[in-house]
Image 1 (tube, helix red, strand yellow):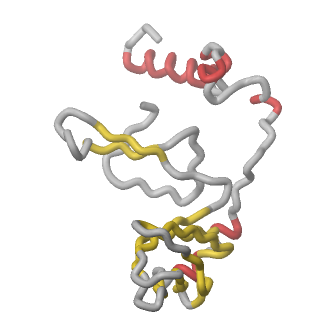
Image 2 (cartoon, helix red, strand yellow; image 1 turned 60 degrees about the vertical axis):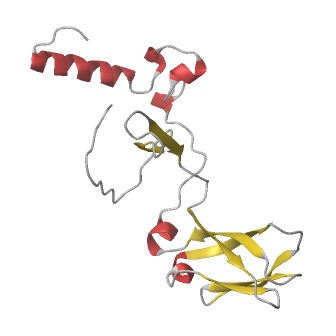
Length: 178
């Protein structure tokens, strides 16, 4: 590990990484296994909300979203999936007042829904990520993860800095090997 934290970490700027996951004790075998899941990521600052709802006797259901939803999000996308029946489902009324309405062509239909929105809070609006960026001249021809391209560690962007840091750390601890 380049760093290990036990407890909460608060970053007030951005975090850039090659990958990400959560790691927990496996719920079916916590004494012997770990369970990993990867983050869901996109080129947008996207939030995801989802749930299940059952339409009423007339085929309508209103989905209530958190009270902060409209203040935090814009550019909504909807996905609906009918569960357990052959039925049609539509978004009958788009999001307004932190709620939207689903309609099915039959009564009492269970519908799984997902809504995504792009963050529109002040920080997000002022700090959109650049999705594609040219490497600085000193990093061109070098890689963040050279092993993924079948290249040696000397092709890593920070190889020389890391080598020097390991040497200094070895001198400080009396460890003479790298």
